[in-house]
Image 1 (cartoon, rainbow, N blue to C red):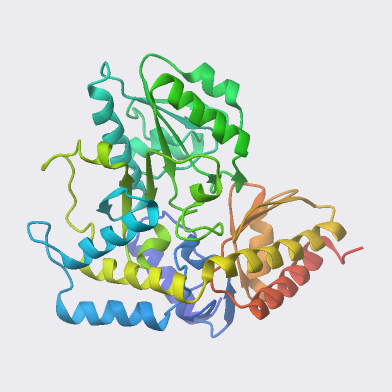
Image 2 (image 1 turned 120 degrees about the horizontal axis):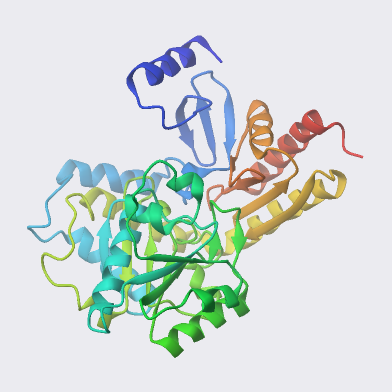
Length: 400
């Protein structure tokens, strides 16, 4: 660690709550590469934890943010915000008619999605309970801690809000067992991200959708990490046999600025009346301008097609490493949301890769997660795979 980085680390220690354990100080980024305060360049396979769909400082996204900041950086929701209207129109068209509510973070979007589901259940016997899934992750507000069936997320924050029941992902029988006369909705990630990069089986999704229809429940998709092209379609549900009643977006939506959205079927969205939901910064003009630019870039640069080819390249490279390193137990995921399951601590692999110039992150104790920008060039993937290979050789010994 350089002296400059140590100075920043000391400021973190002295002045900030100890909520994170950062490793390097990043100063600048372009595309899929970033430069640290130590002057070392890294290939970024994290993209701000799936946030920078178009990479760092994409010219079109940056221009949209700067131009809007010069005009009107913020206005309250007491007034019409043209960018919010245009983004709502764009998402409605792309999703097939859903209506939007804009917020700031994934947790905030998920919490409002649950509120809308409860609002819908009010006239159906006052149903309010939402079934979520073990190993899922929905955010860190109190309600979303309760929705997140992971002890490590919940510990220390009791008493948590009630209204959630848990089932096992990809296990339809466990969902049936969790149903009660209180159930109003079933909420899931199309690919569990933080829980270990676990894709939903199509048959499981269809079974959940059938249960919702049979019991008059809402199907809620948390697309905070999978949305905006991460899995090869703009919304991950587009490549499944089902269509949710409500779903959420965040992370990549704002191109690096805080922005999230709840998208709801029109008949459900119309239950929301003035004063029921609200947020000061949600739908900020700069964030909405960035989101419109992100959607332009995804379309103009054909990033959905690129995700499929780049994802295949990265997956094949990781599978080739698995063939020579028995410590790699599995490679799974979809598009450019991939997980490498390893023996031992995934953080050791992350640290070894970072030392050689490849930034990745964990998804649980034993899964290394790769979520690069959607426009990462093939040459950067190849270079990153070489770094990962060298890191594994150093960590585990030369490949057989």
